[in-house]
Length: 460
Image 1 (cartoon, helix red, strand yellow):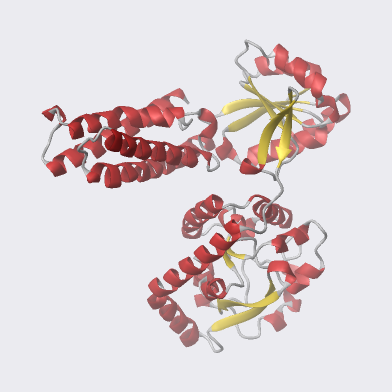
Image 2 (image 1 turned 120 degrees about the vertical axis):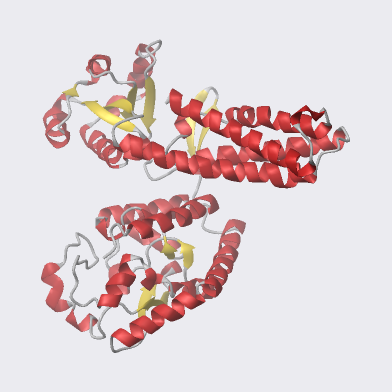
């Protein structure tokens, strides 16, 4: 990862130099002119990588997953903009507005795009087994199996599980399920040395209580091996978790999820604004698709279906019709071919889908009329998948938490595999969003939706 960090520093320094050079060329000056602007351009060249380092944007922990890396870059951009504005005012420097108003925000934006490209490259390298950390997972059998499964599925996290350490009663089960070397809780250091591990991940269980964890941390001192602790709050993430010291005892504070307040108001306003702009821009596309549906198969252009939204209230969801008119009446005859493991009906090759409908589904174009639902307030741009009333009737208490927020046109399920996901995985992703939603997360999901749609993964 050191070479990855060095590459980021070099590229982002070049970006800062380019930003300064563009401003100087625009004003007809040079770095050697000795003016306040030329010195400011040189200062940006030095300050930008320094601020990125100071905000933790070059920390290996931020690479490859989550939104924290982007927030740190944004924080560095804000500090650079604030610093340049403050110095320009206090020292009465004759700085070009192009530097403060245009160049620094543009530098921040281009750096964010560069980080996204670098992250995509890093994900490909990690999928090939490169730029990863070798991990030994420690704990009880069930917790270890769950964490191993998650890490193996989410390869972009860069944690490659090479061995496990569990209680004697769990060794056989864990070994058979994972196919990995298995040791005891007292064999952690030996396993790490044998398999050249550089990280140990401890799950929360009775055997991994305070005394065991303390002793393990002592044993790892000076070894260079990183110690990670999975707190057992798998679906509670990011901003809701805080370390709070009480009389010297660090406790993990978990904030209550937010379902009301000003952020919800902002989210609703942004949803309607984005939907309105999208409908205007996509009007020719919507008309073309409507004509294609209407001319190629008999029946209405739009398919209206009752779905359940916020608080259990029903609404009519709109889609371009992608099936034959009597598709609902044919459902019972196809039950035997259902490949879903949960409450949904799924078929990879559904005979009810029309040729145009199959094209629409592959690119998720049949979902575009839901922009009218977003504009009307019954749906959000990002949220859980809108369920059918029959599904909701079979929900248990935990799954019902999906109804605490508006359903979304897209969501974590959309960017994580869509119809390829199991029922359990779909529910887990929806609940993760409900518990941890934020405006930043919404922006990231919208950004990734385009790539998911173009890849057509899990769409049928």
